[in-house]
Amino acid sequence: MIINTVRFGEVDIDENRIFDFVMPVIGFNELTKFVILEPNEGTLFKWLQSTEDPSLAFPIISVASLDYDYSVDLSDNVINVLEISNPESLLVMNITSIPQDNPRGTTINLLAPLIFNLDNQKAGQIVLSGSGYDISYPMFKKD
Image 1 (cartoon, rainbow, N blue to C red):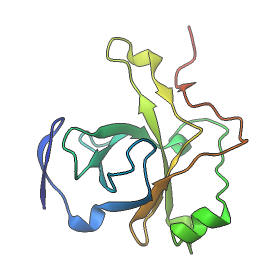
Image 2 (image 1 turned 120 degrees about the vertical axis):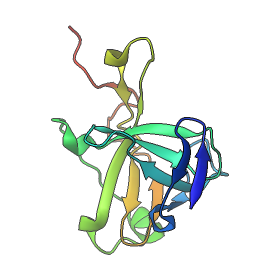
Image 3 (image 1 turned 90 degrees about the horizontal axis):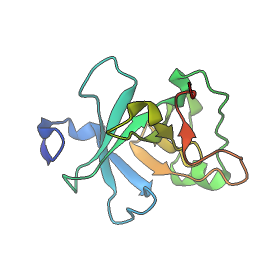
């Protein structure tokens, strides 16, 4: 399947890699189909690209690849909605904000991770209420 994107041009994707966001990305309730793109293999950053809106792509990162003390506890509701039966089939990613003029000012949204069920391609963004996590946690320590 070919999708048109503003950031990456035409991209050929496997339809089996499209995630159905049954728990929408906050602020984008009308968009439910996304794919994870990795335009530069081997980098920490990937992109969550909407297949319905060519202009919408979020830079995302797996906090597990960083040296952060971070854990995600899923409620029974999330487990049911995403139909999670195997925790090892989960991918947890976090949206980042990368200032164009200062990449070292990159922040990570730890409060609202993206949860991907790789078994059934269902996904969602959840809010970790009461976790104390920050919505804009600095990725790099200040010099």
